[in-house]
Amino acid sequence: MTDCQGDGEGASTPMELYERLGAQGDKVRSLKSAKAEKAEVDAAVQLLLKLKIDYKQMMGQDYKAGCPPSEEAAAPDNGPAAEGDEDTVDPWNVSTTNAKGVDYEKLIVKFGSSKIDKELVDRIEKVCGQKPHRFLRRGVFFSHRDMHQVLDAYEKHKSFYLYTGRGPSSEAMHVGHLIPFIFTKWLQDVFDIPLVIQLTDDEKYLWKDLTVEECHRFAIENAKDIIACGFDLNKTFIFSDLDYMGASPEFYRNVVKIQKHVTFNQVKGIFGFTDSDCIGKISFPAIQAAPSFSNSFPQIFGSRSDIQCLIPCAIDQDPYFRMTRDVAPRIGYPKPALLHSTFFPALQGAQTKMSASDANSSIFLTDTPKQIKNKINKHAFSGGKDTVEEHRKYGGNPDVDVSFMYLTFFLEDDEQLEKIRQVREEIGPQTRSD
Ligand code: TRP
Image 1 (cartoon, protein in one colour):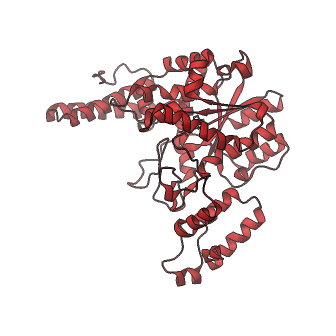
Image 2 (cartoon, protein in one colour):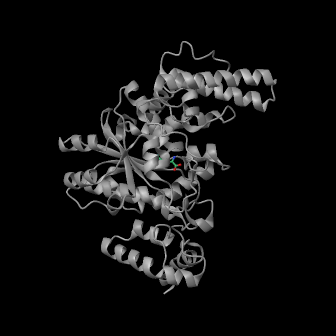
């Protein structure tokens, strides 16, 4: 347990104060759960409040657990969100009360990332000389960190590499899992660059009720689905952590360098770990960070540690890479750049993402066309009116209609998509049972 660390006096940096706040918050919680004397709890709460005031004075914004005061997290404070107004987005939970899905504009502000605006899409088109992928045209990839810097360097003939990954928690992958891979394949094609794909079977062993052997087997099974996306065989390295960590001294060296530069309080703040989480979870973020540095892969990059990394991923993985970007300059490496995607909606609606643990919310890569049709007809939320009659009369709402949202991910033809959107609006989604 974290012991009393004194008060805010003497905290010379925002990070120190932030860490003290995290520790004091833990102390209050543990006193409460141990049913300590009221006076003791009150004193701890008083100190916590005082630290929060000190923090606000120092930073000009409220303390927020999970948002350490690094430049990455320098997000302006928009005031406390109304109860129930906040979307939840972290590596383990995605939920919102809004049928249109998570408010991604707000998330950009909260995470302190940048919007992928028209200017950036145009620039990508100019630099790679190809029509932008539909995920860029339609805002599926909507947020980034340092993408302009990657393009500046690329224009000066300084290349970069791609890194993405998958936590193999089940045998079958679903269509939502494919989004980052489909986009990564396009990036690899248009920029003609190396790609590393991390399969975090170790992570799934630590988090789920699975054996090491099962997780490793899922990694191999998932690798087959990933390979089927069509990556360049000569430029792609797919690895299981359980295999590669022990086989690559260079990879492990980077893991320990990262471990040395992140405190328990920082990962508590970023990931919400508690004192009762196993130590494997606490150190895991260093393992997800390591592939962001090119010298983790000497078989590809030799001893070069200066090759820029670009990570396409769903936005829920950003906490890992905020941490990575914070550590990178301190261990002499470039910060990885990022491209963030929205979530692929569950069949029941965009309030949450598609999840393999709920078979009815998911379309698996192993489902037959007939199964898919049945799932869509039976479960896909149409956002229509209360009765079929009303629905026919007033039309559907493409903003919340899940089968329409799926088309925005998968239908290539912009004109056809727009036509379907208009038809949906006019007559509602009963057209899909045609
Ligand atoms: N943690 C991710 C998951 O559970 C897997 C992952 C590892 C990943 N490295 C990554 C995802 C890099 C995106 C980018 O699915």
